Length: 161
Image (cartoon, rainbow, N blue to C red):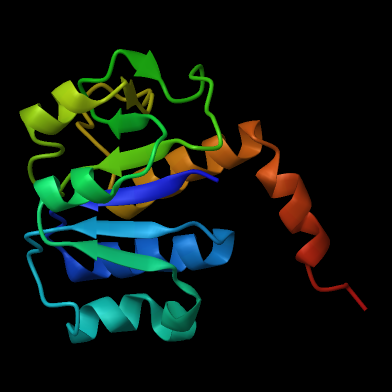
C-alpha cells in the first residue's frame, strides 16, 4: 500500500485533513519535521476530528531521520515542477508519495532524491497549485484506483437500508 509523506508541513488544518484522508483509506501517514506547529495543536486535532485513533501516524524529526527509516519502495514527489502527470504514472504498492510544505513545496534536495516527480494537471494556467490536503487526496486516490485498492473498500460501505 502506498504511504503518504508530508515534508515540513506548516498549516495545522491541512495536516489534519490529510490525516482524516489517511484514516479513511487506511494509509500510513509520515510527518517529516520540522513542523510549523505542535502535534498537540488544537486546529490540527479539530481538522482530524475524532479519527486520530485510526491514523497510522509516524513522526520523523528530520529528512535524515525519515530517509534512515524509509523501507524499500520508490519516492514519488508531487510538485508543480513535475515532469509526468499523476494520472499517467504507474503506481506500485510500495510507493511513498511525498508532498512539500504549503508555501514552498518539496525542497530541491528532496526532489532530487525522488524516483519520479509528478504534477497534478489543472486547466486554468493562472492557478499555481492546489491546497496541500486536496493534492494529497487527488494523488492518493489515483494511486489507490490504479492499484485497485478502492474496489476493495467499496465492500465496507454501509447498506442503503
